Image 1 (cartoon, rainbow, N blue to C red):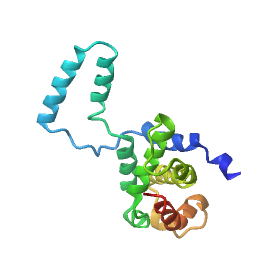
Image 2 (image 1 turned 30 degrees about the vertical axis):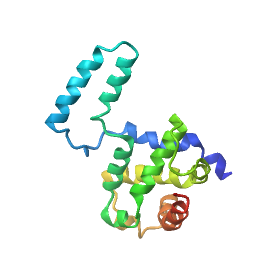
Image 3 (image 1 turned 120 degrees about the vertical axis):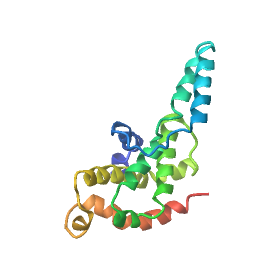
Length: 175
């Protein structure tokens, strides 16, 4: 039953959900020299034949854009400090969440094996959904210190309580 609920589409959807949120401004502005080079490259790319010019221009457009990984990391960093302390090595987990998403969407090989990626689909999906929901609640005034003492919130509290064990199992799969 659990396998039917945790699908590849759910993992991809959980990752892609961060793209629909307004951008969190964590990107550092490009230095003036980099902007000058980028401008020259754009000008040169326009003179190339199609489809190369379009591919290069699209790639150059992403230089200043915030990556999916950076968006997720920004939402994690917006969580209350005591909560983040309970989630060690989260940046490592986020990295693998995005790599798993990229594997399923683009075929980019993940750092851990494909089998391990499939084994960890529960943990990776839950991680993305936890960060998404809790960071949005925090923006709305949700109080971590009250929540942790209250009953309920089973799924998210369960994620938090099982995180260290899940992280340990996950790390065993990393080469």
